[in-house]
Image (cartoon, rainbow, N blue to C red; front, side, top):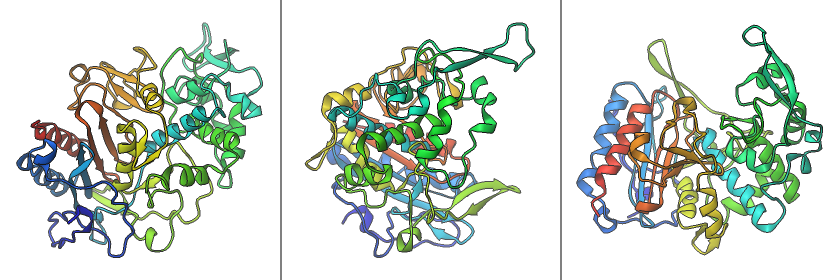
Length: 421
C-alpha cells in the first residue's frame, strides 16, 4: 500500500496523523515506495522522525508538518503530523497543499534553462532583449562621499544585467541596498499588476551594486523578471508554460498559482505566533493574477518530490526529459565563487550558489547535516528540501509558518543518521 493511500485517525490532543490523504484527491504517485532497508536506510532510525516532529508540535512551535524521504528513486518515508489548521483542528494530511514561497525559484530556473536549451534564451543575454524598459543605461546607488549614513549618489553601471545575473542573485536588482531604498515609492506592486506591467517598472530602478560583483539575495524582483522573460521568449503566459512544459510532464497535478473547489480545500493554513500561541490564517488563492515565479507557487510534498527527483535524475522523470544532464550539472555547480555572504541566516562558509539554488561545497564548514554537492532553496513559508546526488537522496520538510527551524534541523539530523548503506 502506498503511503499516500493510507488513512490514519487524528486523535484529540495532537497525536501524529501518519501518511493520511484527502478522500478523493488526485495524487501523482508515479514514484514507487520501498521498505527503508531496500534503499539503504534504517527503519528504526527513520521512525525517530515522528516523535521528534511531535515534540515540536506539542511545544507550540509548529502546527503540523509533512516529511518525506526518498532514496534511489523510491519513497521510504512519507508522513503527516499535527494540524493543517490549528484553529479548526484539521488534521495534517500528506496531500495538503503548501505555499512554496521562495522554493518556487528552482522551478522558475528550470523553465529558463529549458529555453536556454531550445535557443530562445542565452545566459549572457541582457534583460533588455526581452523587456525594453531595461534598455536605458543602468545606474548604481552608492554611498555619497562625505554624506550622512543612508545618503547615496548614482553612478553608471559598468554593464547591463544579464539572465545569468538574475539566476545567481548577482544583478543588484532590489536586493535590500541603497538602490532599493531609493526606489521604494516607484516599485510598489499594484493589485492589478501582471508580470508584464510590473516588470516594466523595474527597468529604471537603481541597482544596489555593480552587476556580477556581489551575491545579494533579490527576494522577489529578480525571479519575477525571469518569469516575464519566460513569457516573452516562449510566447506563453508564465502559468501556462509551467503547467504544459513542467507540471503535466512531471505529473504534478497539485502545483499551481490558482486554486478553487475541492483542491482549494486542501490548502494548509498559514500559522504565526500571536498572543503567545499559534494562530491560523486560511489562504484564498482563487483570484491570483500576478504569477510570481519568485514566490507564489503552491504544491503538495509529493508534487515537489516529482520535481526534485527529476533534477536528481539529471533532468528526466518517467520518460519525460525536461533538461539534459549537462544542463543540470551546470545549474547545480557553484557560479558565485566565495561571494555567498550568509544573508537571511544562511551559512556563508562552505556554501555556493548555482542557477536558482544554493550548493553545499563543504558541509562541515557550513554546519549542515547533508552531503557535499547537495542543492536546495528553502521558502520563507517554512518549506525546505535537500537534493543530494552523492546519496541519491531527496528529503522534504513542509510546514506553513511558525517557528520551524528546530523541527527542520531535527528532521535533517534524523535523515542523516538513517543512512546505513
